[in-house]
Every structure is written in C-alpha cells, then in structure tokens.
Image (cartoon, rainbow, N blue to C red; front, top):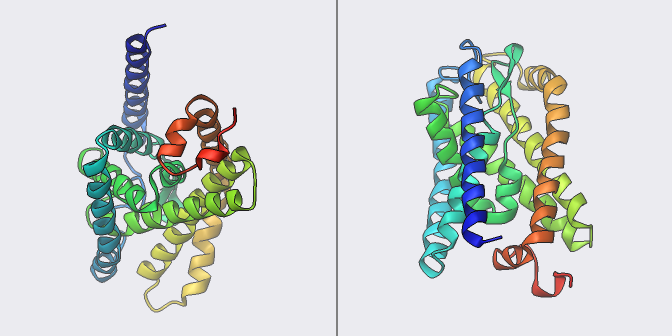
Length: 258
C-alpha cells in the first residue's frame, strides 16, 4: 500500500469528519450556543477573563513560533489537532438551567501531544471560529471560554498524563484519566465563571454548586467518553507511530517497545 494512497485516505476521513460536524451543527437548535453564550457574562467579568487568557495565548504563540522555526513538520500536526479540537467541541448538548451547553472538549489529547501552552492556542482558534462563523459561544465570552477549555482543560489533561506516566501507569489508563480530567476541569471552571459573573449580590458557593450539579447528568458520561476517546488515540499512536510520540516528547526513546 503506497504512502500517497494512505495520505489520500487520511485526507478523505478528515473531510468526512468536517462534513459530519457541519451537518450536526445545522441540525442543532438555534436557541442554545456552544460554551458560555454571548451576553451571559457582565462586561467587567468578560474583560477580566480576556486579561487572564491573554498571557497564556501569548506564551502559546511564542512556543509555537519557536518550535516551528526548528521543525517545519510541527505545523501540520498543530493544524490537525486544531481541526480535531474544533470537531470534538462541536457537539453541544444544551443545559438550559446553566445557560450554556455540555460538550466534549478535545484539549486532553492536544495537551498531551502538543503541550499545554500550544494547546491553549489551538483551543483559542477553535473557539474563535465557532464564535465568528457558527454562532456558538461569543466574542465577549471568548476570554472566559479560552480559560475554561483551553487553559484549564489543557493543563489538567497534560498534568494528569505526565503524573500517571511518571508513576508507571500504562498508556491507556494515563490517556483515559487525562481526557477525563481535562473534560471535568473545563466544566468545573465554566461553572465558576458563570457563578461569579451572574450571581449579583447572591453568595458564590450556592450558585456555583447549583450550576455544577446542572452539568452532572450530561458531563459525567461525556467525561468518561472523552477519557475513552483520548486513551484510544494515545494507544493508537503508541502502537502505530511511537516515533511521533518520541518526537513530541510524550515518550522517551527508551520507552518505545520493540
């Protein structure tokens, strides 16, 4: 089987995934938006989250520029991961009581493969495209969504994977926990952002608890699903292309099995 033929099939699969996501989005209800919806957060809180997100995005761009300057093959991988995060996070399940949606995030696998800094940039790009062209999320809440999905999701997934691998947990289990923690960390921080922004004079903790509980029926199984998906992707790469995992620093050369 030729390398060219394999690449062509891969391109077709990616295109098919995009088309499937597009069909799903056109059939979704208009009344709900992905992530934190436009206009949900007061202006002051929206600006604050932009300021918090900005240094993480800036550092991620710096890391991306530094790595691609020495290895041009890194750019296609970043593009592929951006497409994967975009598609994975385009699967909204409305949570009306929380003013937002549940959905997988994809930042667990991007955090593992690219590192948390560049994963933040990938998430930011996916969120911006969704806000501009798909009316999912919003420009005013872009900073808050970057913090919850990009920063918290990427860091949680990356840290979980690294710690578990450090104590010799196998690839499948480490990948599963990375996906699970990335997903749940995203919604923990989203709940905190929503509670802080809309509470007014009410106490923070009771509202935070209510929003968090509202997410549980959808996010509990979605987190498990994302953990299984992340584990599958990591194990597939470990079996088929361990050289890529070594190149990206996920594995050390001595960890590659015969």
